[in-house]
Length: 371
Ligand SMILES: [Mn+2]
Image (cartoon, rainbow, N blue to C red; front, top):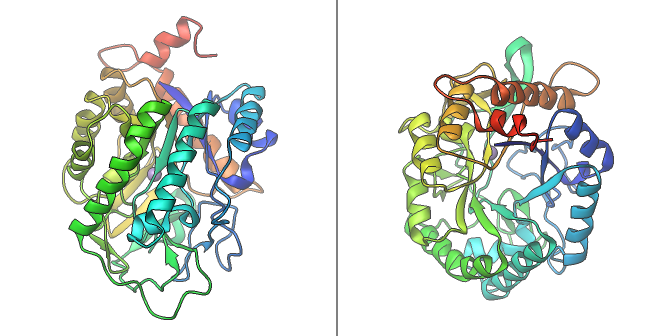
């Protein structure tokens, strides 16, 4: 098991790479979508949170990320002594009609296929994605974590409709006609996911790239009047079974699973890690269940994080764990302090003795492979 740090687009620089190394990370997960572009209330200091107007403006629809810029990023991460494990999330500008079943769907599937081939050529093993119309919407911020640290949560269902021209919480068409997105049904959305997997999984198999699906965050049957796919733990299995392939895997978000109202988070970790279906893991803590939950520090909240790591180690998970989100700590560098705290906790838990057996990370460390 390896420790990694997720970095937003504006953080993809040498200083943040050094910060990751200093915290004991060996891997980086990079976001290429700029969630904060032309945004009003969504500040780039923390994870993105927006009101009904969304996070910000999606990217350039005619400029998919090229092989050259991916290869340059790989080189810069390498030079910092780290490995680029995954690109996390597609830009709504590049695949809105895949999510919405719109007129540009075929063309956008072709663009995503090209991206997957370019990831393979650049040696980036994983593409994380979130097949969701509303995306990460409906959340609030407040002093929810220990000591009044600012964290993210939810205080009830949010079903205000989504304006046209917006999907996945970002505006992809500023000139869209007035009105709201017509609601899809759950089965329509599953069929759109099936189309996506049918088109992209064979390309991923050829390119040696693993597709990794994030569950719906927040996990509710609907958000903003639109259906969601993976809002209970058992629905992850449906996604895997839709297109069985070693390249159809999960961006396994433990915090989101813990927010789900059914099932048991440890059983879910066991069920999916035993199948070898975790491409990489988001590991954070939370108190409560959707739609009434708050994100917490990694050592408070409902999840026994050490127990999660123990199950992952027992099932031979050899991928990357990243902290996902962390509360903002009171100091001049709230994001860095929050991440350093989470990474320190995870590193200690991964290296420390685990009941019953030695962790994989510790075995690797003794062999001198981890550094
Ligand atoms: Mn997550």
